[in-house]
Amino acid sequence: MSMENIATAAIERIHLSVADAGDLSRRALLGIGYGADEAQIITNHVLDAALCGYEYSGLPKLLNIPGDERFVAGSTPMRAVRETDVSVLFDGGNKIGMLAMYDATRAAIERAQRHGFAVVGLTNSWMSGRGAYYVGMLAEAGLIGILTVSASRQVAPLGGAKATLGTNPISFGFPTEGEPLLIDIGTSALAATDLKIRDRFGTPLPEGVAIDAQGHPTTSAALARLGGLLPFGGHKGYALSIAVRALGVLCSPMLDLEKIYGYLIIAIKPDLLVPLEQFRRDLSEAIAEIKATPPREGVKEIRIPGERAYRERARLMRVGIDIDRRVYDALQEFAAHK
Image 1 (cartoon, rainbow, N blue to C red):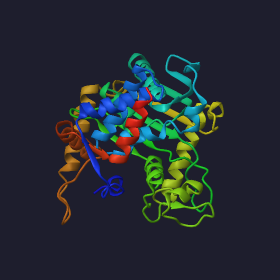
Image 2 (cartoon, helix red, strand yellow):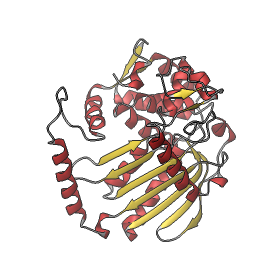
Image 3 (cartoon, rainbow, N blue to C red):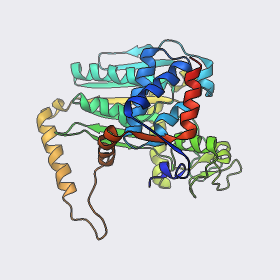
Image 4 (cartoon, rainbow, N blue to C red):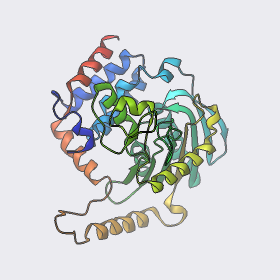
């Protein structure tokens, strides 16, 4: 059982078809004030996360929106601050990231397909969801995609007693002859969405992922939100987190309400170096070689990043998804405000 599912194992579950889950999400988003097109874009994102088996990044993520101070502050239209043929820096107007990053990714695709390469920065946005979703869009368009996110301060630096870094994920997407190769990792020991939902429902944290406001280890999500999460992998995760923060500086984060958010998208057309079909073929052969590695004793197979998510998506598309009864009831309350 994954860490995301441990917290809800003993809680009543509601089974939903994919269509019903999408309908619930859309109605909840309409109820809290989003327009129909916006609600559909956000729904597509969280439903994809749910189908890939990332429960807390799915429908429960919607619970974090209405109470967020940035949602309450309101938004303005997204605008280009600086642009060239191959680059654009966007001020997201304090829009939720699942909307602003969707548009920023489409801009990266358009520029890279015309010019072979694109760099797109976004600031003044928040809660973008899974990076794999956006680099997946790039890979589906026949592009190599890299995404880094300098996020809000929720992670303490190595040895620190206060959160000064974000969860700072980095994601990669590569086109292959089959499903895109997607790699999406946070640089924190626990996802921020996981922390928030555990705080909401009073579910304890695993050992060794967070500290309280005094810098002491804690398994309380509430105390961890006053203190901070820890980097994954000790000094290695910490160093990678700082690199992501540095790339975020390219995105003029001083325009952001929290003076830290910076999303950087790099899109590369493989044809700059090798024909796309050759890239797809050669990468697919490399993946096949890796998967053919003899497994160690007790290991059933060698899996590639994203492979489990693709299998889970195929299964859940057929059978539907289960969500926590408390999440279901809260979303129904949102929908009732429409």
